Image 1 (cartoon, helix red, strand yellow):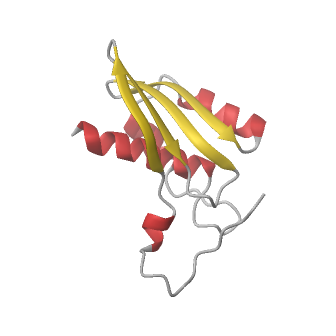
Image 2: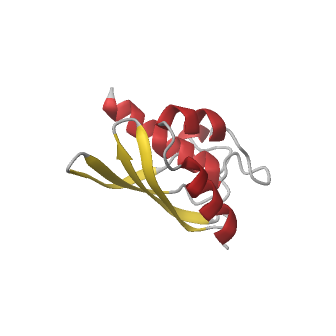
Length: 116
């Protein structure tokens, strides 16, 4: 795994450097499918989501610790978006300032902002 370390002299705020980037977003029959690239500091590389209104239908985390990411995904399915954000936001992995669950929370926050 390649670890990317942000320069302290960077003019980009740290929070932006650890944020996810939307790759795709579409809605079919009321189901919103969205894909995000993670920030590069986590083992996971991409998060794919399906939501219906404010409920998470499906989560797929690409790469990362296979059993853990599958477990996190399954625990999120059927829950309200804000509930999952509240549970996962701010979890840190090995001092990186983020984690796979935190990246999922960041992706869900982006979805929530767009829904308002």
